[in-house]
Length: 68
Image 1 (cartoon, rainbow, N blue to C red):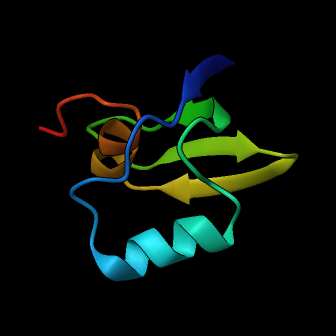
Image 2: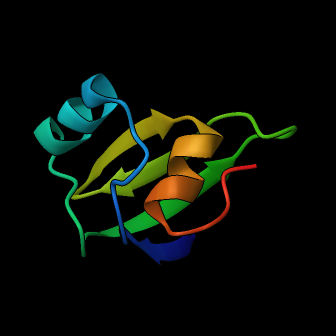
Image 3: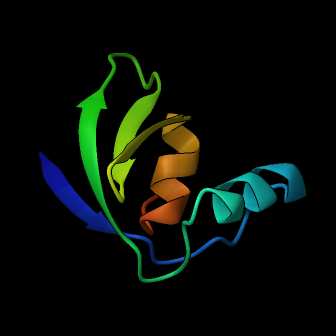
């Protein structure tokens, strides 16, 4: 599994931001990418022994990459 750190929440809509915070994600959180689906499909991440499916674009924004 690949390890990533949450670097930012900039560029997310309010509902997504609130949901990620309620799941315990914050800047500096260490996440593991469990599965990347093809064609920029969802990314399954693991945080504190729970697995969460998020959009590829959201994952890229969180980890500081270009979402395109």
